[in-house]
Length: 339
Length: 255
Image 1 (cartoon, rainbow over the protein chains, first blue to last red):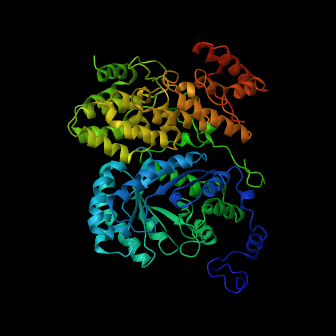
Image 2: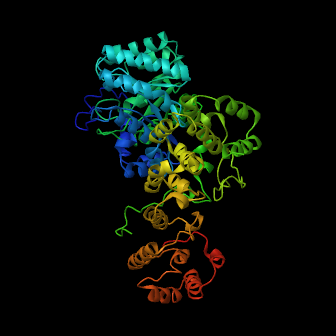
């Protein structure tokens, strides 16, 4: 990308920092954790279903205490309602439990993603079971929904799900398209307003330099996905926070089955610190704004995770649970012995 | 009084007036309304620990339960009596999040025709979610009453395999059997080979049965540096009554 060390000095396409900043950036390569000690992070968009236990362990080590997993396209199109149902159930069931074993509080948003909205017969059936899942404990919004190819079917189910969100008073997590992004983002916001949703209940996701101003000006939350190649790099993200501040801005990893990085948030926080952004602003964009926006669902209690994952009394039987002391036993990855 | 009425009586002493008003409004709903009310309980009812024996069914221990769980069980009992009750409960199982599964499994012994839920109950034993396994295994009289010997043995074995305390299983001693004793003797041998051990109280399940290795196993326990193992050996050799095993009713490490 624009940080190719060979052409960097000649072509600073996005990063316009001082030579001093550039020097720092080169010196600190690789050791982000030294800059994020004591920080806690909330990743409001990460697809853990597609990730391994190593990722959970790395997230916990890096200070990520809570995550939101939006329902999305699994890569392989689903052909029947049962696979949607099982997927939604796994987001509130098995994946939530798996996460808890690593001391990370797991929430999710439930919705029909834009891609699969194009299979209309199936989409109708999915719409029928959505209300049941949206009422479940720990479901913090409708998501991720919105446009992909910007077809009529996508619009139809985007609108229908906005109505559901309004009815249930839940936040909405809006996926904006990769292609024709600017128009797609404007259209997504206009439709949400048309349906009477309050902008503070809507998180517009996958923003970039071209979309952010309009999203913030209209009162929506603006999420940025730090994802190599196709979305945002974190150096660009630092520049955005420098320019727009920290109000209603949040970063996420959207880590999934693609080449992505679940540690995007702590790494971005480290870079922000190195580049002189205040800790208060870092805390807002890597934790607080995500918490505030999705806590509007009434389903997030910060006390559940801020001091480490407490064992919920309802999960505990006579002190006996897999979560001894809140965490599963850790494996020393450098040890030669496997016991 | 029916079990549902008894549960409701307990709820009136545990829930606050706002919660009670909501529960009373929902309990007369149709099957679909009851199912949705079941899902919505944590939004309306607190998770206050109950911390006392409610005296509902024999062996149905609510000391470690919470008020929201009890309310969910109450709604399930109302739902099970309806014509579409079974299919609605099947849907709840299929779409359940973890706390919902716990409430569903806690409810089984009190549902009308409990035996029709046997396939679900054995699924809970297969679950890798700790709280779900615990919901069927501990303080729940369902397995003792409805499980086949094979299913029962699987429950006990999985409990030991996962280093959970078997004395919390209802009917543990009543349903001890030769096949389980043989399996456990093999399992203890496997653990020893791997440099691990089984909790000392496991030997109470072998005490009245002859296994191929019983003599050697008891000698090994008696010579163990672990005082709990020595106690277990003595209790078996002396044909001690079950009450004497109380001293070993605790969690122990597997190493």
